[in-house]
Length: 342
Ligand code: ADP
Ligand code: ARG
Image 1 (spheres, rainbow, N blue to C red):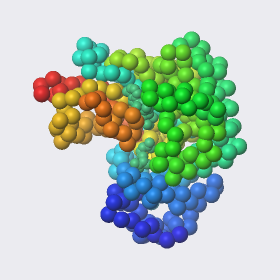
Image 2 (cartoon, rainbow, N blue to C red):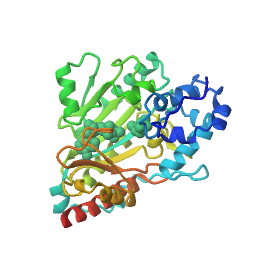
Image 3 (cartoon, helix red, strand yellow):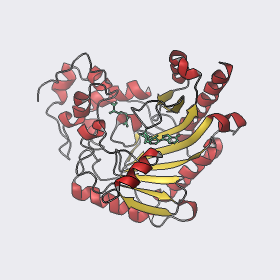
Image 4 (cartoon, protein in one colour):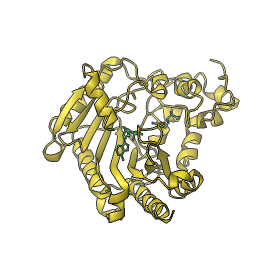
């Protein structure tokens, strides 16, 4: 493999930190699952507009290719190789009272965590047989959940176009054919062993075998962030009794993309900010101050529609789950104050 042909269009953190020296050091290395540097950077090389541009194949990749990933992780999360990750899933430690403004401006709230099974390669390097094994372990575990977590698993293989499009449009299901995931090897054998589990009112959902083997999701209309967080914690604790997740003391929960390490948590609201949308510099300044990320309403890499944005925590590693939700809450309160003043 030769050093990639980067152009001025390549803006990712991978491109920034893959110097010729780092490339020479890593180019012939591979993990026990045969995951190589070429596999790790393909998505960022093929998609010049990537922000991050690299994925791992397994937990071991984070050590084998550390000279690249440590720098990406430090840049994105502000977390160095000497830091340790901490967890806090106590909902009572969250200071997020509900008020009228939150319910007025927030359309819906969603909190998700990513998880991958211990002793299993990640989706980027998993075999068709192992992927089916993941689907079977996770869907069996889900079928034993009770009360408000009780639901049904729907396989994507054989799901009608009509049902999948409506689930995607209503923000419940991941979309097919994402070019970043495609080039990372995450869409191999699509749609086999992919699917979605949800309870009747779609407030608790689990995606199986998308970017991570599990995405555990709690969501509902309106701005009651604490209730959404409490439901997510309950579900995560129930699932932990039934399976073991890939975890490291240093990096927290292991995920295929370095942006999701640690808590693997993204707490978001869809929020109406039509005035602020006319001053994107000011909007971005507030987002930076509160460690927030701004997305459009049809998921990552989509656009805002009608002044509604997806606002979420940006940091996930080296901060606790409570802090992730707190970042989002504090930032949203600040955004609403400015929106009202405009
Ligand atoms: P993630 O990595 O968190 O799964 P995406 O940005 O790909 O992120 O979003 C996945 C789906 O979840 C999309 O359909 C998106 O519109 C939806 N979504 C995200 N946040 C919310 C929210 N607060 N309310 C409703 N839908 C949401
Ligand atoms: N690989 C994409 C990029 O570099 C997405 C990175 C973060 N998002 C994610 N879903 N992992 O822009």
